[in-house]
Image: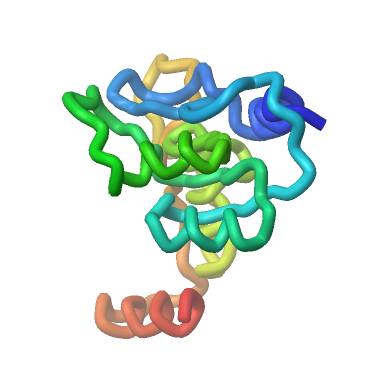
Length: 155
């Protein structure tokens, strides 16, 4: 399996062409032809995550938040980007394309919270999936009670 193969699998579930213009999702570090034997999944690529990936022999990290979000002006030797390149660990970031996906982050959150009649919260006439979700709660409750429910469900 290669980085490109993994990218294509993610792209089937959360198409990268649905990301918003300001986002930076996709293969952000490494070659698409790199062979992959072991993969790690993280919310954010940190130096600790790179250390762990190296210790575990991972070839690829899949992150939700982009490891490179905007233009880099320099790359310090202690930076995450430098260390990933030095350790030859590739990164695929799936950010708001995964948020908006049919069975992506926001859909799963809505389901975990027990919402019903869940709909995509998109712009009228926009063919791309909406980023958020809207749905109904099972019974009337205060904002405080709903906040407690969120805390309980998401630990």
